[in-house]
Each structure stands twice: as C-alpha cells, then as structure tokens.
Image (cartoon, rainbow, N blue to C red):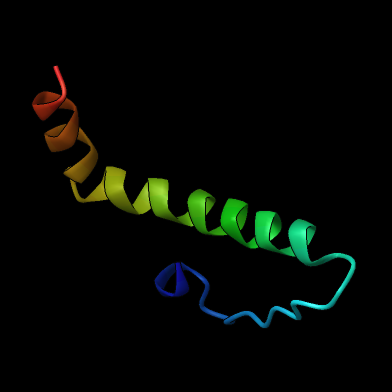
Amino acid sequence: MKLFLADGFVLDEKSPQYRNNVLEFGDLAKMRLLPFLGEHNVLNSMRKLHK
C-alpha cells in the first residue's frame, strides 16, 4: 500500500475517524494500483490465470 501512496500516511488508532481514514487510504491506493497494473499487463496476465 505504501508504494502507491507517495505522500505517505499516518494513522492514529485512537482517532474516532480511524476506520474512515483506513478506508480512504485503501481507496486511494487502489485507484493508483489499478492503472499501474493495467500499464504493465499484470492485470491481463492474471486474468488469463483465473479463467
């Protein structure tokens, strides 16, 4: 996850927004990961394996 969050991230486990922060960082990493996989044909290769 850190690889796709160039600005890094800090989570405070005691924060009332902790769950929302985790989900937000996960969504951000996912949005950056999918185009990366698409550019490098990893996604296409994995799809062939799962057919």
